[in-house]
Amino acid sequence: MQLRVLAFVLAGGKGTRLYPLTKERAKPAVPFGGRYRIVDFVLSNLVNSGIYSIYVLVQFKSQSLLQHLREGWEVSGLLKNNFIIPVPAQMRSQQEDWYRGTADAIYQNINLIEQADPHVVVIFGADHIYRMNIRQMVEFHVEKRAGATVAAIPVEKEFASEFGVIEATPEGGIVGFHEKRSDAPTMPGDPQRVYASMGNYVFSTDLLLRELYTDAESESSAHDFGKNILPGLIGRADMFAYDFQTNVIPGDPIGAPQYWRDVGTLDAYYEASMDLRAVSPELNLYNRQWPLRTAGYFDAPAKFVFDEENRRGLAIDSIVAGSSIISGGLVRGSVLGRGVRVHTGALVEDSVLFDNCDIGRRAKVRHAILDKNVKVPEHATIGYDLDEDRKYYHVTESGIVVIEGHQSTVDISTLQV
Image (cartoon, rainbow, N blue to C red):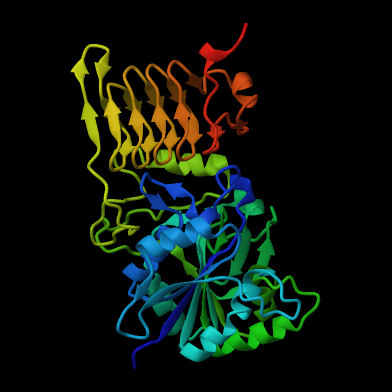
């Protein structure tokens, strides 16, 4: 019997901690790695795993996300079970309200499950950076005859207060959930680490439908999988934790560590972007057996021009996307999106530049995130005087300068003295 799998991608979060990058876009639509969007990771994982029946649930500030899905992901094949379809909030609750929680998001689209009649339902978030063979998690779920399976990643116990922690038996059976508690139980046989929930689930369909209908009738529920549905199943259904570290990606070296980052804050997003600069990064974007898919842009190749003293186009330990031109400037340890221009004498260090940024002659940018279309004037500096930067831009606690797409730097040559 061929297993029927239906996938839901939860892509409706506000992403407030990533502001101002989420001022005009949903968190899953935030660019990452030069030419991708955060949502590309979960969609690539599903498609590479052979799961092609996918609904993407959108909600807040969804225009940018919808445009990206239309340009690169919307699939309507000849087979009815081959699709990737964005679904706006359906307002099916009695209050005709937005999604009130992760479980409510699925409940408001419960008709899609009933119509498809799958054997299992896969529910994944769209706001993490990672690669995962989801088919292996589904197979684990079937082998265990589980009602629900939760993807889990071991983290040091000192970080337990930052995650929902799973309490599990040595065989992986879930016996408890502990929400952001510093004293949460450690992993069986490993007193230094805890099982952190990744917020990714596999459900047997009958169990999921029954629990969604029951939860919808509860006035005291937050209608959330992590807070309500899963804790409420303890002792009533067989639940298992799937250890993400056991996941194997085709084409990766045997024993390679699994990369997963929650990019919920600007600093975390910046650090994950900087991870890509490594000679052998833990997040391998170059594995052709497990490609990271995205929209198909008709970009010209990146170009590096001029080879003169003090006017040499170079990029070192960096990622440079298509149509970018490094014209006599120097880029070091940075990630550049599509269509970026770095002019003569300019210096970009340890920064993330979104599409179509323009760095003027002899301007300097370091430790910064520039949203799309930011134009830095000639001779201007970003990231060198944080007190001055705070007057105009957002600066994180760690000193990362973040500039909104509609802004540009102050051109000191135009100021009156």
